[in-house]
Length: 141
Image (cartoon, rainbow, N blue to C red; front, side, top):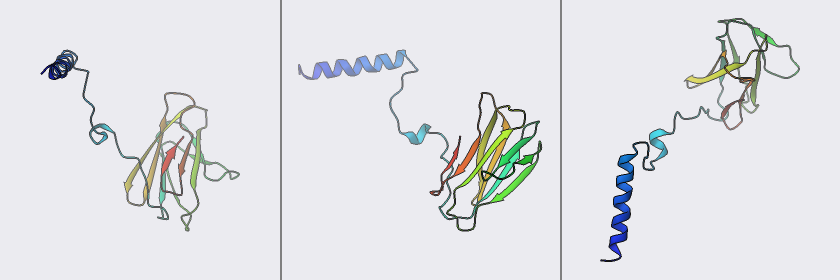
């Protein structure tokens, strides 16, 4: 009985503390509050990349380093296809013509489409690139 008393007191103290502080919660699984799943595609799957300019200014895109930048006017949408073999990393670098920060929002509207919406950012330097890696993961930097 004497060994049971400290355990019972600890349990009561824990319950009382929990009810006095509603912000205190018990540990749970990630399944309840882990946020949306990351966007990922099947490796080798052909993917169409849609880019939309949601800013009020000109945004420039460069798919391969060393090529000329592609201008994207406000409200304009461009589409790119991943290379046929599916092995190459698809990357896209983007920037606002006036040097303003951008916020990139990625979505997967259907099985083979990756959508990138570029809007005004709140913090410098903002988002500047999108990478679709060989393993199908999507990253924004």
